[in-house]
Length: 219
Length: 219
DNA sequence: ATAATTATTTAGTTTTGTCTAAATTATATT
DNA sequence: AATATAATTTAGACAAAACTAAATAATTAT
Ligand SMILES: [Mn+2]
Ligand SMILES: [Mn+2]
Ligand SMILES: [Mn+2]
Ligand SMILES: [Mn+2]
Image (cartoon, rainbow over all chains, first blue to last red; front, side):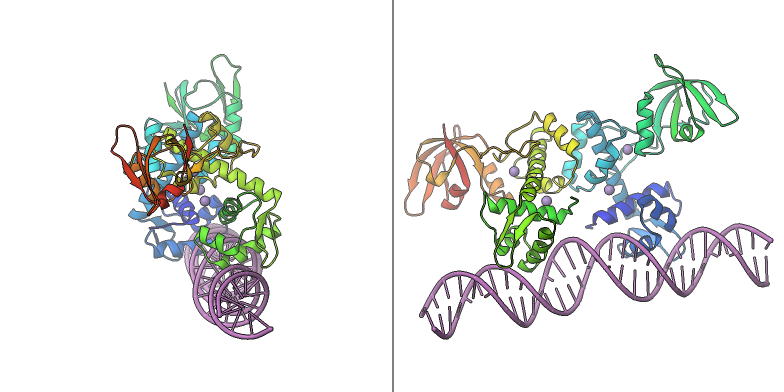
């Protein structure tokens, strides 16, 4: 199965949006890939032809077993390269997604597996997302809730559900990264913002939008 | 200047064939890239349009200053990744060219420079070829001659002028790699083959074809 | 100088991936 | 149930990168 980079990007987006077994809409894929719905329909026909997705007109899209297998390989490569960039080359977490977007398309199993070994077979990437192993087995994301729903006071940052550079840069500037310990000081009903404190730093207030994308775990 | 992967591959081939200031023929590029002369003519028009090459019908092709600058960036990336694959991931020299052929197209200056730093700013790649620095400055290949023309008896392997996997695999199997010390035992006039000896290994005879592609330096 | 050969270009197609505009289908509202 | 709105698909076009076959230019041999 020799896929183009465009095909790989579609497969990965569908995997991401599917999130389990949901059927994925044409529009959502177009939005995710910053392309037009008409282009998605065109590609859907090609991927169906290659048995990578199930697709009937107007019925949405789901990955086949084969399609999911390929998606997991791409995700594995993407996340391993992100680890490499952060752990070995000293990038910070908001810089790596874009570069990994290209590196993920270098298809060499030997390269991927050696890279994983070189990195100590990491199980999560710099954003807290789990890395599939060589057989495509992926751990469920470790139990975590978004900060806006958390009940405990003392929490650890477990991940972020939005990879946008601007959000990650913001968190970075505020000293919030993977594993950071925070304490909830106050929750404000009127705008659902939350005031938190990181050790040795001034308290800060996060908007509802932000606290919804931050995943946390009680300590 | 946003180039496609195809355009980058053409630029790199022209750089390689130009070797200084020679004008490069349509056919030689087609052979190098395993494509057809008609396709080279098509691309020549595009690259001329972008001011990356000088080209007039039937007159051959040369890189402009801008074109050469880009070529050196691609070569830099290619050779740095080859170093990474060999030094950090334990690949052997015949395996890395193909993978680097893809990795070289990931365009991030920050990535390239950090990778170089991570590798200790190497000056030559695993095949003995010099690596351009961040400004595109490249050392002349260290003085060496092909084995078939060498006069000294005790020699060091300085590089190979053919990157084909099959040749590199052959040399590998015979224990010949970059920096290996060899001693010339005998040269045979009738077929221009040469018998050599590596310490702690049986003597072996190399054909003229092979000895022409091996670059050596007297010890 | 002519003829034969080789190199290069042109013309016309194909595949991949994208787009816009228009048509169709599905869903929501009254 | 009829209508309005939203989602999706189709039709037709385009750009990039390749190809084949045919035409033309340059080079080499006679
Ligand atoms: Mn990608
Ligand atoms: Mn990630
Ligand atoms: Mn390449
Ligand atoms: Mn090399």
